[in-house]
Image 1 (cartoon, rainbow, N blue to C red):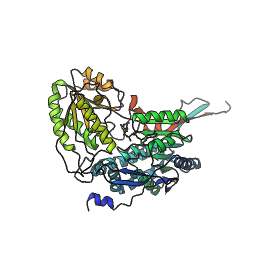
Image 2: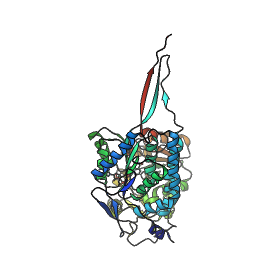
Image 3: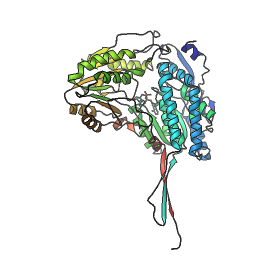
Image 4: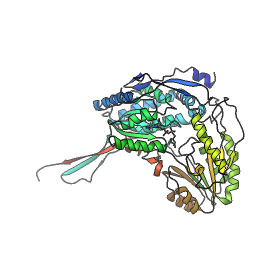
Length: 496
Ligand code: NAD
């Protein structure tokens, strides 16, 4: 049986998950969409939640929260449930990978070998951390003492994107649940099936009804209703800057709920004339730029390279890019599938066409792999002859498109790197540690790599500065985004 036949054997659940049950929308509405892996197949029947469904899900989450059935459980008990969830995800790893591949067109192999294991690791990391966290106390004095304890927020909404559905979901879901909150998750309309399945697995793992709900639906209807909801105390969002700004507005218009945002990026990748391993720098760039067709928020899509090493780097990069030629989503040999949708394909293609019109030089890998006839695939694309102010060099393309800009000095590279509204992740390649450290301090991003990229693990906080976001996913700092601090001050009276 090949991978696609294996997918066809699945019994796919398409309904929302509210209060421990799979349910249809009150209106009976469902989605219909064309899948990108062949541009033809229509996926229909996924429940499309609207405002009234969000109200029902939030009420269920609030009832579960006020019953204290989950939030008062000890950290050790919560940990056990989440570890059971991780185990079930492991058992259903192929199924989760098949569902995400089918909906998003990204290669099954990439989901199975990389993305789903990362999501499982994230659940385990948070579960294993929660009973090692300490609360704190103020400096003790003779007749007073105070503890400062983490408390849950209440009902928390999670709004997630399609580019790495399970990883982003687990980065948020695990710390949100472990801090005692009840959760309503609104997955992206392009990738709902794995989230719907995850809810069933969580129930099987022992999650009480109402604590974890999944409400598939359109962003501007279901997402907006969730972010505006007066009973929701926190929203954790990953997606575009455009929608991130709306989420902040919704919080202001409603109840000043806590907002954390992981938004876009335009990662600077600085290679100085002190970098000796140009081949490795090109290899690491292509690995982080071209997998998943470049649909990666932290993609190092702006190379700023010393002019003396540019030619060598370009030759290596072109060679390396051949490892990431898009092919059939369900071919188990392929590591790269296609882009998520026709709309995304057209957006990326538009950037490439505009660059050509602008006089930028566009190189595209001309090798081809077999993929279904109408699949939306874009070959690795390298753009040179670029002014740092050109749209292609400043805006997030979210496709396999990298701009390479020669620089004369390292100071110039830092200046260009910082002339950006984004600040998610970046890198510097240099064998002079003083220089590398100086550049790492100066570049305005949340995560800086030296002579590497993307090999940070769950212990490293992930999140941007400037318009790349507010707050952190991953690491024990993520618990802060899903909890508040409460002080209990005690005065002790006793005779002297
Ligand atoms: P998007 O902003 O269009 O959608 C993200 C989510 O928001 C989806 O669930 C969508 O339904 C919902 N949404 C849309 N409009 C909404 C509204 N008015 N109110 C409430 N919710 C709404 O983003 P996308 O196209 O799905 O994802 C790509 C973007 O996500 C890129 O910009 C990428 O950089 C970013 N991203 C960032 C990170 C990170 O960690 N920083 C990770 C992955 C993706």
